[in-house]
Structure formats: C-alpha cells, structure tokens
Image (tube, rainbow, N blue to C red; front, side):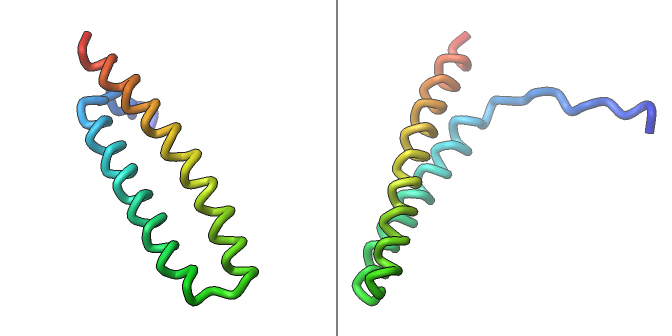
Length: 74
C-alpha cells in the first residue's frame, strides 16, 4: 500500500457533471411542486425549506460552472 499514488486531478468534465447536477436539481424542484398538491401543511413547509436549500445549491453550482469554464480556457 505504500506505493499507491493519488489519481491526477482531471477537471475536463467538471462543467458537464455540474450542469447535469443543475438539471437534476431543477427537475427535483419541479417534481416537488407537483407533490405539494397532495401534501399536508407540515409536508409543504418541509418541501419549501428543501426547495430553498436546492435554490441555494443551484446558485453555488452555477458559480462553480463559471469558475470551471474560466479554468478550462487557460
């Protein structure tokens, strides 16, 4: 085990992977809106809180996509 080397940092597909995560998060938000029609008041509050966190994550992922795209231009 002493001869193990860490994998090199390959950031070539980071933008694609991040964009896929953004798409999945948006889909989750849309699905949660559908679920709210059948949810109790408590469940609605929980969904709203979760969607707030999802929106914050979307913002962070979009910022990271911009950073990665700039990094790949070098």
